[in-house]
Amino acid sequence: MSATRIDRRFAALKAESRAALVTFVMAGDPDYATSLATLKTLPQAGADVIELGMPFTDPMADGPAIQAAGLRALSAGQNMKKTLGLVREFRKNDDATPIVLMGYYNPIYVYGVAKFLADAKAAGVDGLIVVDLPPEEDEELCLPALKAGFNFIRLATPTTDDKRLPTVLTNTSGFVYYVSITGITGSAAPDAGKVAAAVSRIKRHTKLPVCVGFGVRSAEQAQTIAQGADGVVVGSALVEAVRKSLGSDGKATATTAKSVADLVRALAEGVRGARIPAKTHG
Image (tube, rainbow, N blue to C red; front, side, top):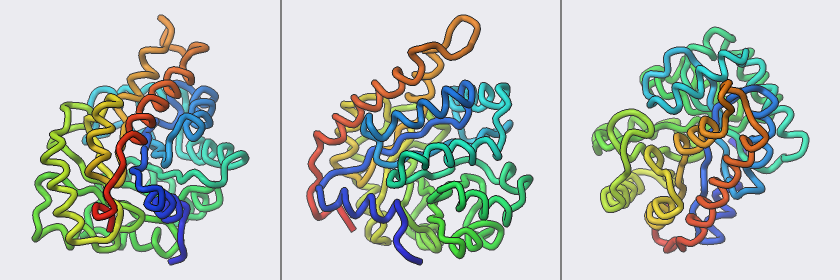
């Protein structure tokens, strides 16, 4: 498999000796136009990799903030075709920033795996995180996605022990997403010491970058986590910034995209303030 935008981005960051800021936003939240405007602001604000949520009616691993974002998007008419449309529009002005679609298998299955992979590739998607497909189901989507040139990014958790890790890492590419807490997204703050130890343990099994998410909300937290990881993932805090910017009617306001960009800018400063020792990289 040739180098992807994700591979190139992490190689460049390794050369800079700093971690990546990986930002998650929900496609179509709170509407298509505002979502596109927000997406376009992220790289300029300091996002190194973008995770774009695929709205789904039953997001079992997500906390209230991301669940609400998905429902706002679905209520505004967001679907898979429009989500791929967002990526296509984004790519007109940005051919460098990696985009990872994140979510659940059902919307992909309904769309049709072969059609989804072809359309996602044409739109400019680089990677997939599908949280409810375990390695035992790799033939369903993972292997066809790898064959089509996508990175397939897997989650590791505090309960993923050394016996399970090799299975999780098989066919994983791009980076490993370490879920820093047990539970749903946005439910607690990560313990930096435990996270650093977990990242070191994972790195004994893989040369892939390890990015840490779930519970990072502030620039200070981002800076601390970045000292022991190859990337920091922020999601719930960003979709909360969207929610807080909405008008009393629940619609986007003139400040919605800016609210997200301002938070990303602060988080990016935190991540960039943490210089990463070369030995933490695989």
